[in-house]
Amino acid sequence: MAEISYKTTGRRKTSIARVNLVPGTGQIIVNKKPVDDYFPRETLRMMIRQPIELCGLTGKYDITANVEGGGMSGQAGALRHGISRALTALDNDLRPKLKKEGFLTRDPRLKERKKYGQKAARKRFQFSKR
Image 1 (spheres, rainbow, N blue to C red):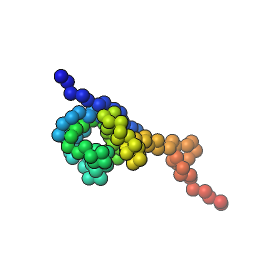
Image 2 (cartoon, helix red, strand yellow):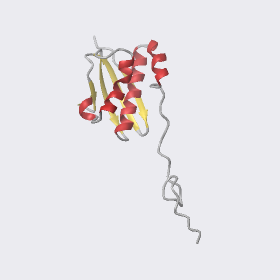
Image 3 (cartoon, rainbow, N blue to C red):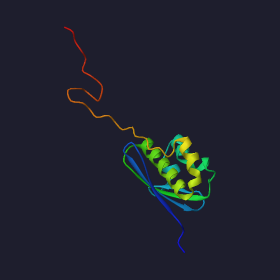
Image 4 (cartoon, one colour):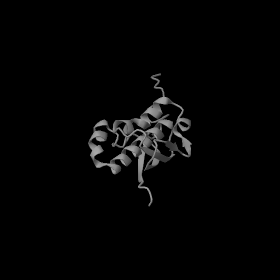
């Protein structure tokens, strides 16, 4: 009999995380590397573990994720979003707890486009009166 796995997708900025949640020992693998090797900053690793710790499921599920696009922060946010969605698929009673913390909300902020006739999205060329 095959183990039950929960496959979900998380997104933030331009990053996409495909998350697979299976019963296990609490191991988190990101792009075939342990989470501690993939994310160098402790704050990012802490951010990824937030939904699991909030639900009290630390050490009960293995997480395998493929993350692409964006930078480290965006990838960590996408991974947290994907894990939260997987936990909701696992047990729908966890949904209000995760929603209250804002883990199920897809952060819609993206980089603003550069406008023509300007240096950047909002930066203008210096104005000279004379």
